[in-house]
Length: 82
Image (cartoon, rainbow, N blue to C red):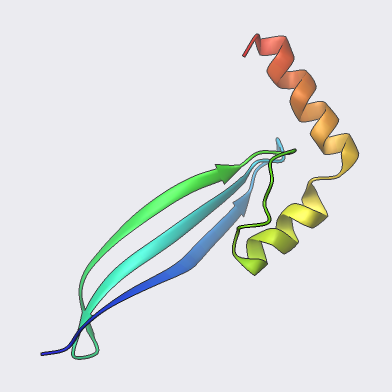
């Protein structure tokens, strides 16, 4: 019986606000068959450092997080008083 833990980024979503949601799936495999899995989701907001993200998420952030999107996001947050 060989157990293996596999982590993959299985979903990347871009929201209208410029936020990028990244979902990571952690699967436990036994002899090549998945016996368990769980998901973790985190967000990358415009202006955040995304250098440690999956390369696909980095590409999406680089394309989406323009100076205009970052400024609009920060203005929206400031307007909310957050």
